[in-house]
Every structure is written in structure tokens, then in C-alpha cells.
Length: 83
Image (cartoon, rainbow, N blue to C red; front, side):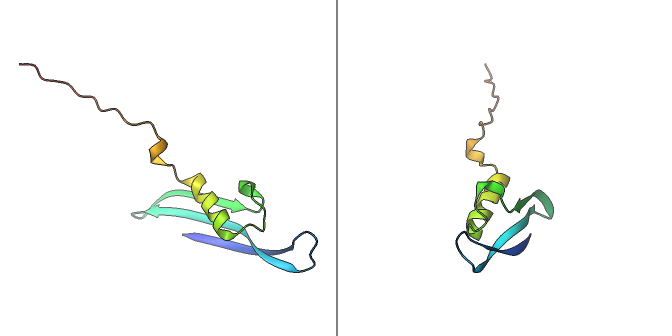
């Protein structure tokens, strides 16, 4: 689920107003339960306010979602039965 807001601004050396994504509220839900929520605001994630929507959304998701491949593996304790 998401909510987004746009704003208008002028790039350097331009008089033309440009629309840009200024705020994103993003909530990831699984089986009816909220897993995580996050908010992007202009200037966040170290990107320019005129960066594309995909750059902003992907950066936000990267902050929200843990890559399970980078987590330490769980060790399984086993025991051998001796006869």
C-alpha cells in the first residue's frame, strides 16, 4: 500500500517548473499483517529531488527489505545416535 505526493520546482538554470515526487509512504503487507512501513521525503536517500520515481522507490525498498542471502545462516543442531 502506498501514498505519494508531488511538488513542483525549478532545476538550476531553468525557469520551467518541473513536477517531482516529493513524498512516498510505503507499507508492505503480508497475509493481512503489516511487515514494515517507511517514508521518503525530498532530500532523503541521498538522491536529488528531480531523480526518477523508480530511483526513489527502489532506494526506499532497499532500506525496507532485508536481503536474506546476506544474513548468517542458521545452524542446525544435530546429534548422531550410537548403537
